[in-house]
Length: 438
Image (tube, rainbow, N blue to C red):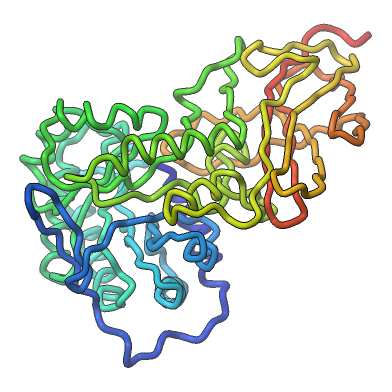
């Protein structure tokens, strides 16, 4: 659900890797099929069973994805820079990864008009050219037609366009399945897709905190075909508890890792009949309500407990050196759900208990931002809120004694705890400043 910004970041970072192209002799398309055996769907790549252990990527650290046990990466768009896309595909192949290729399809909420036949035809031709560019690369796994086209849509003709695009891809590239990722689903949506886009080979399911409801949703919608979970991860900001002033409460890094483990085991891996695998969101970092909400890495590059959890889920082995663990951040003993309100210029103490199982020395970094005012949906681009200068003193055990900002408003206090081995844990607590300075 996080679409355009993540994709543009992905293409930029992938293309920056100056590595030699894949040997031209090895460039031949993989043959990918979905088959049904003993009542269960299976994905076959060149005749061999293939279960997707994937990640949506914004930063493009494909080497670490492969080292952690992942086998596939998904994108949201092919962009406009052919050289960068080819470099990404070459890099994926060198690392033993496949790529689920996202094709950017116009959205009604961004102004695309599916009642305009000329615009629909032009989009179809543009996508045909993109498919022709990359269809023969051996790293291509499948095609993703758009992303969350059902989000705030009203015109059912969008699914007619999806059907046209799907048929076009089947004509141009008979070797790779075609799907469309959905922002949740219900019976009405599935009935519409069955009627208007029957040529799709599978669907993509994108759920976060409500991933637990997936088995019930499949049953109620009577979707009995194959699917991939094309986005899943932490509990979303739109489904989290709120402070009294409406700030969403973000889980800390260790809590997210525990949720990843449970959701993967109990929902994704548990469905051995229809589910062909998944793409965790997000193998990188991005600003979406906060700079830490969805990324499995900090902006400075350190991996978090969720990365360790994914390695364990994919390989059955924890890394030799793990990220620190952390608890919730508090201000004067109050956590985020208490809706912390401070007086301007008052002195307070912030704490987040962190430990390192490997005995590594921990370094603490606290900072504050203004609370995000973004109201965008579907992963549309956001800017990081302004930084707030805090008068603060850090103790040796990571406690922060700080003075509340003088200006009333909504803020968020962050802590990042690093172990010196490129791993980190994090937490944050929103707070509000009210009243007059003392």
